[in-house]
Every structure is written in structure tokens, then in C-alpha cells.
Image 1 (cartoon, rainbow, N blue to C red):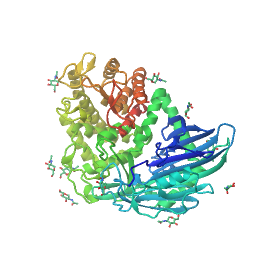
Image 2: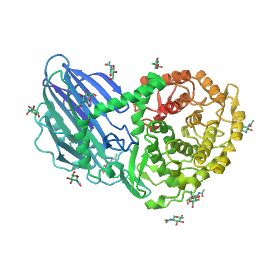
Image 3: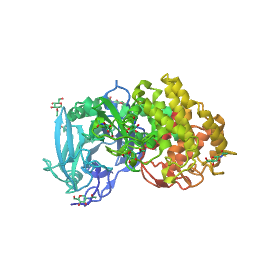
Image 4: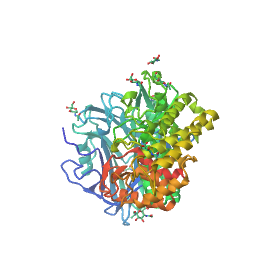
Length: 635
Ligand SMILES: *[C@@H]1O[C@H](CO)[C@@H](O)[C@H](O)[C@H]1NC(C)=O
Ligand SMILES: *[C@@H]1O[C@H](CO)[C@@H](O)[C@H](O)[C@H]1NC(C)=O
Ligand SMILES: *[C@@H]1O[C@H](CO)[C@@H](O)[C@H](O)[C@H]1NC(C)=O
Ligand SMILES: *[C@@H]1O[C@H](CO)[C@@H](O)[C@H](O)[C@H]1NC(C)=O
Ligand SMILES: *[C@@H]1O[C@H](CO)[C@@H](O)[C@H](O)[C@H]1NC(C)=O
Ligand SMILES: *[C@@H]1O[C@H](CO)[C@@H](O)[C@H](O)[C@H]1NC(C)=O
Ligand SMILES: *[C@@H]1O[C@H](CO)[C@@H](O)[C@H](O)[C@H]1NC(C)=O
Ligand SMILES: *[C@@H]1O[C@H](CO)[C@@H](O)[C@H](O)[C@H]1NC(C)=O
Ligand SMILES: *[C@@H]1O[C@H](CO)[C@@H](O)[C@H](O)[C@H]1NC(C)=O
Ligand SMILES: *[C@@H]1O[C@H](CO)[C@@H](O)[C@H](O)[C@H]1NC(C)=O
């Protein structure tokens, strides 16, 4: 067994000299390789573009996931976020007026398909309509058999157009990489499967001999697809990825089209056009720094969702993974901060992410084989540990008021775009949730709130504001559905709740964090959804007072969450910024931008960091950064 070298490797030969564009110096075992010189990198919503210059040649490497659409049935599948397809595009040209001899190389090992590198893996290849498909996956294929950050079932496909410039092989990393580096042809046959993933690390390798390259750009690309076969187990029932329904489970067909058409449809450039339109809109709403932050957040949100076909209901369902903080499925207080991306661009799809939670809370799990009595009067917190939904109500991390109000607020947002008839079977459940809120407002007593890392948060003023907006959200959708009397039951209590809140929380130039702790303060980020839903609840003076106060609390990298710690949350910062005036919004946005550019923690964007030092406190790569786009819901 060899120690791990790298999962993905990229090499380029220019006039007989080998350089690496992906992977460490030791990417070729036993040889130290130099890297190409990086001249630029830009993160767009659907693309990351790297530019390199070496020995008179420019190489542009673009990582593309064309997840541009979710809602629209009329667009080719290829542009839909339900398709698990990404591309790596390699564009090469001469930039010194001379011709250069160029070869390109890409490979990846089987590591993305295992939980443990000693697992046995198998591989194979196929060819259809000029598209080569190399695949790799475990021998065992124990579908949805464990919960962890890795899956060890399904297959990874590497596909590319085959022409007379292409060579490919499935062999050990050392063989494939060193043969390419030395300009030797690949071995003529693939290694025989199976063997453990870490036994001479088998890789799927492809190379292109571009011959003599001049100033005219030459493009090659690979597509990367993960076919999970089954994505989710919902209370005993395995559900397949949604795209498998459209393609009748025929992966070969899907790959042939997604690779074949990618060339003719010019997918990288189409994504560039999509990004441009999006960036223009971001810029007009929030300026340059906001645009950069929104671009960075986009893929982190879309990428944490998965869409399946629920064959029992003949309906598309969506699930969200709580990445890095517990690995839960469809955590309600992660869905809410993620929501702005969906509500801005894919509101109808957002409902599919709420349906599995409604079904669980409504005692529908017997349809799927399990039969859970959901006997709590408030909403569930999550469905289980990804990808297995099997949560019992008494195993939940209970945040009653938080998640109950979250659900009602999200449903009210969705009802802007969808018919409320959809809720018919859920009215008793939703009214029950409204009753829970009425019984526990205007002071939520001692409840956990979403910021559970703070510990218990008794008499939480911000949580009370969310509860109040949750009640108003329910009254709003009942009214939309024509249920005027039912709506009145909820709306009639609102003014008393708000009066209590205003009187009890008021503390001169701001409102307190805790009803019974004078001089405490906190960001009242929950008020943002009053504006997004356009509800007439808390007076504008509350927003004016709080927003002015936050400006006094600005630190180098943001605003602390409250007076107890220096740390803050990026999502809540931008919820807060969204509900303030333009100048206040900019001041907050610029600080988060500064954090994102200057922090020394090299992790996928974190949402929990120290607002004075700019160091990560915890969490990374979470979908909650969808909250960075909150301003898009205001205008
Ligand atoms: C880097 O690339 C971006 C996007 O293509 C471009 O706007 C920017 O000008 C480039 N910067 C440099 C230094 O080339
Ligand atoms: C991986 O599997 C091997 C063989 O079953 C076992 O010895 C090892 O402890 C496992 N490693 C991890 C991290 O689970
Ligand atoms: C490869 O094919 C192209 C056109 O299909 C042709 O122009 C070129 O000469 C071929 N190269 C070799 C090495 O056969
Ligand atoms: C997939 O579809 C192609 C035709 O487009 C067919 O030749 C092939 O047999 C199908 N594969 C499976 C597994 O059904
Ligand atoms: C792809 O799009 C770019 C920019 O829109 C254009 O310059 C190029 O010619 C297109 N290529 C093809 C093959 O259509
Ligand atoms: C589910 O359990 C409840 C009580 O726990 C029972 O009344 C009901 O009949 C069960 N449903 C099915 C379909 O088994
Ligand atoms: C679900 O079942 C539990 C236990 O039987 C019950 O308390 C609860 O009211 C039911 N929920 C709904 C929405 O009917
Ligand atoms: C809900 O059901 C569980 C399991 O049967 C039980 O332990 C718990 O006490 C019940 N909770 C309520 C609030 O009824
Ligand atoms: C404010 O709320 C706290 C906690 O509920 C309570 O102890 C206190 O009496 C209230 N004060 C006023 C002025 O309502
Ligand atoms: C972006 O934020 C940085 C850091 O706070 C600030 O220096 C810069 O002026 C801002 N840029 C724009 C265009 O607002």
C-alpha cells in the first residue's frame, strides 16, 4: 500500500518539459515536478477560472457546474442543477508568437467513491457516439449503507470526446503520471480490477497530444459525473436521483448527451453568459463587494442540495445536507438561512426541499415503510444523518420556536410563487404550529435558538421576533387561502406581542438581547423576513434604531453577534445588512468582504468567525451562506 499522493492530478508538457497545474510537487511518485505559473483566478457563480502562463503558452482551466436552472422544465437537462454533471475545460494557446508542442493530462483516483481507502474498487470503460466513459466504484455497492461525509456506493464517471489526439488508461497513479511526464505512450491495456483503492492507487487517466499549438486557442474538456444510483433513504425507502427518472436510469445515454452536446452547445461559454447576467444583477443591487461575496456563496448553497424522485408520491423531492456541523439531513434552521438563494432564483424548487419535513411531521412516514408518530406540537429540527432519514421526534435537538417559525416563514415565502392549495393536507399541522407559537409568545422562556453554540438563550428577544413573524406568516398564508376566520385567530394576537416586545426589550438607543438583561444587545437578524415578506409588524423605527446602533458596534471584520463574544455569523450579518439602509448595508458588506479576502483560514467559506481577528471560529462550506444574498429579496 502506498501513502496518498493526490486524488486529482493535472499535468501539461510544453516543448517536452512537464509541469503540473493540479496536485502537489510529489504528484509524480519519486519525481519533483514544478508547477505552472498561476497568473489569475476568478470565482464566478457557476465557474472557477484559473489562468496559467508557462514557456510561452497560456493554459486556462475552468471548473464548470452548469447548475443554472432548477425550476424551468423547458431547458435542456444539461443546464439543470438536478444533473450531477461538472466539466473541467482546458484552453491552450501560444502567447509569444511562436508555435509550441503541447500535451495535456488529467486523472483522478477512486478515492471519491470510498469511505475507507482500503475498500476494494472496480472499474470499467465504455464508448458510445465518440464519447469515452471511464468509471470507478466500490465492489460492495452497499447502497445508502452508512452515514458519513463520504459515500461508498455509486460510480464516478470520467467522460470525454475521443479523437486521434486522445489516449486513456486505467492503471496505477505512478504509471500513468510518470509515463505521461516522460512522453511515453500509456500502457496499451487497463489494469485488471478489482483491488483496494490504496493498492497502487488506480486512476482514470486521459491525455491529449495537441501537437503544435499557435495563437489560435485549442480546447479540450472532461466531464465528471457521480451516479449515486440511490441518494437518500427516507424512513426505510431508498430514493434514486431525480435525473435517473428523466433518463430512465440509462447513464450511458445521459453521458453521451451531456458530453456530446457540451461541445456543440458551448456549455462553458453559456455558463459565462449566465454568470454575467447574474453578476450584473448582484452589482446593481449591492455593488462590487456584494457581487464577489454572492458569487462565492452560490455554489456552496446549490451544491449542498440533492434532488430525488419520490416514487410513492410521483413527485420530485429535495434534501439539503448540513455540511461540517453534524451532517444532518434538511436541518430546518440551515434551510432558512440558505433560503435567499432559492427564493431569489428557484422559488418553486424550494418547496421540494420543505415537503420531506412536512411529510415527517404529518405522520406520513408509514407510506415509506417506517411508522413514526410525530408527537411534538412544534416542527422537527432535522430528518436524520445524511443520507439516512430516520430521526425520532425525541432524538431531535429541540429548538421549538426557532424551527416552527422557520417553517411557517419559508412556506409563506414559497406561497408567493405557488398555489396554497398545495398545503391542503397540511392545514391542521400548520395551525397546530401556529397554536404552539401563540402559547409561547411573547416571551419564549428558556429555549435553544439556532445559535446553539452560545448555549441556552432564555428570554431571547431576537427569537421572540422570529416567533412573531412566524405567526404573521401563518396568518398571511391562511388569508391567501381564503381562510379569513382562521387567519384572524393568529393575526389578532400580534399587536399585543409586539407591544410587549417593544416595551420590554427597549433600552434607549437599542433593543436588548434578553428581555430581563438590561444593557445587553444582539443583532436582530430575524427581523429581515418581515421585510422579505412585506409584512406590517414591527415599526420602521425599530429597524432605524437597531441599524444605527449596529454601526456603533462595527469591528474590523464585521459586527459581533451580541455583547457576549467577539464572534459573528456571516449569514446573520448579511440578513442584518439587508434590512438596513444602503450606507449601513455597504459598511457591513465591506467588512465581510474584507474577512473573506484577508482571513488566513484556507477553508471553504465559513459562516462563524471572529469579527475582530478574522479567524474562523468553526464550521465551513455550509449552505447557510445563502443568507449572503438576502439583499436580493429586498428589491
Ligand atoms: C482575472 O480574470 C478576471 C476574470 O476573467 C478579469 O476580470 C481580471 O481582469 C483578470 N485579472 C488579471 C490580473 O488578469
Ligand atoms: C479501513 O478498513 C480497514 C480494513 O477493514 C481497517 O483496518 C481500518 O481500520 C479502516 N480505517 C478506517 C479509518 O475506518
Ligand atoms: C487528427 O484528426 C484531424 C481532423 O479530424 C486531422 O486534421 C489530423 O491530421 C489528425 N491528426 C493525426 C495525428 O492523425
Ligand atoms: C441505454 O440506451 C442505449 C440507447 O440509447 C442502449 O443502447 C443501451 O442498451 C441502454 N442501456 C441500458 C443499460 O439500458
Ligand atoms: C462559444 O461561445 C463563444 C463566446 O460566446 C464564441 O466566441 C465561440 O465561437 C463559441 N464556440 C462555438 C463552438 O460555438
Ligand atoms: C402507525 O402507528 C400508529 C400508532 O403508533 C397506528 O395507529 C397506525 O395504524 C400505524 N399505521 C400503519 C400504516 O401501520
Ligand atoms: C401524529 O401522531 C401523533 C401521535 O399519534 C399525534 O400526537 C399527532 O397529533 C399526529 N400529527 C398530526 C399532524 O396528525
Ligand atoms: C413521543 O413518543 C415518544 C416515543 O414513543 C415518547 O418517548 C415521548 O414521551 C412522546 N412525547 C410526547 C410529548 O408525547
Ligand atoms: C420583561 O420580561 C421579563 C422576562 O419575561 C420579565 O421578567 C419582566 O417582568 C418583563 N418586564 C416588563 C417591563 O414587562
Ligand atoms: C470593498 O471592501 C474593502 C474592504 O472593506 C474596501 O476597502 C473597498 O473600498 C470595498 N470596495 C468597494 C468597491 O466598495
